[in-house]
Image (tube, rainbow, N blue to C red):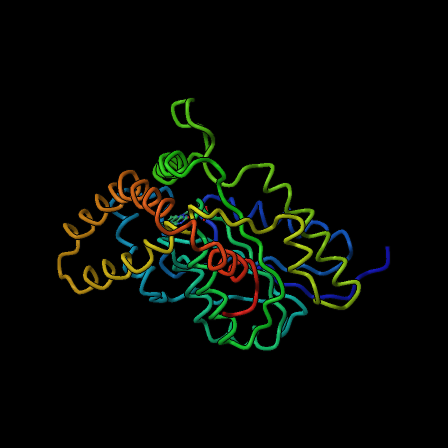
Length: 304
Ligand SMILES: Cc1cc2nc3c(=O)[nH]c(=O)nc-3n(C[C@H](O)[C@H](O)[C@H](O)COP(=O)(O)O)c2cc1C
């Protein structure tokens, strides 16, 4: 096969290794096509230990939501410019994870982003929309050209993945909790599906055109928007912002973070079903146009 003369950077953060698997699957067709793919991992100067303790897990909430960047180790990249940058990130508290947000504030990286095509891949529990909107805006502000987005998530029911992600995050094991619950995180089949998305990207690289890439990815279901999750996330976003502002101003944050933790449990298991029922009766039947427009705006790569 003739070598494809393209320089690609795949940069990402991961704690469990899940995003590394996703990047490997997605980039394998690019490598097979002969492109040069440089993989780089985001390294915070003070990294977040994995697995988490419950206390540390909630302690990062204010900085995540308020988007406060942390120092990163030098990126140590080989090239001064790339034909394509692939950015793999994960949402933390409905916001870009602190390491990903820090990268998007990093001057060296921002210089690379300018006028460069970018494909974003997120791997969430199941609420990724707000983080994506923020990443999309930061990329736009840096002058990058977002050409594609892939949103991977755990497809199990919301309360189930809530339980299993805590087991995963606090034990470090991506395994079945008590042998009763399903495996946490992005399903192996969905990680394998990323190879197909990579093949689509190869076609666009060969044609030297990014036009229609996102539409092609959407046909492959690279982004699927679940109405109920979109609804819950939209309600939770401003509430998280209020909690983050209040907690960040406290000298002793511990009792406040603990209160937020209880709020989160109650909101998910009690508040969300009540709100969803009210919405199903009073709002949703009359909002089909607005819902359609929202879903479209989140599947697209254009800032709206
Ligand atoms: C502190 C923290 C907060 C998280 N908050 C969210 C969230 O708001 N929405 C979501 O869908 N997933 C959330 N997750 C799950 C991550 O998006 C991600 O799927 C998981 O951490 C695995 O990523 P990894 O590749 O870094 O191991 C959170 C994870 C952590 C550690």
